[in-house]
Amino acid sequence: MSFQLDVWQEAQDDIVDAALWYSGRSPGLELQFLSRVDECLAHLETQPARFPIVHGDAQRALLARFPYGLFFIIDEPFVRVVACMHARHDPEGWQDRLGTDR
Picture 1 (tube, helix red, strand yellow):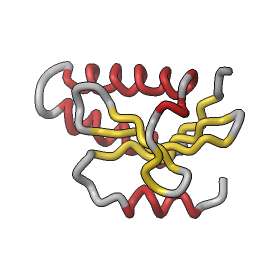
Picture 2: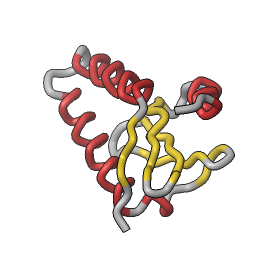
Picture 3: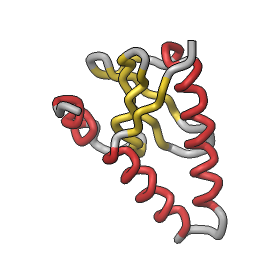
């Protein structure tokens, strides 16, 4: 089964913020980061259940090479990506997003 991605605006903003941060560190690093995000999103479209549950119904898919994770919920036929957060950030920021209606 293939799922449809619903990347919330807050998650899109998280991704852009992280890419901008990486762009200031090394030329082209932001493109590598965005490539890993795309790879991870592709896995969510096809195999979202393989990732661990980390809070309530929310799951986390870690990015390769970067200390970030995509936090999402499965709401068939959708995978709703609610956040892209650094592994050391306080989880309450993205957890609060789960209480909002979309």
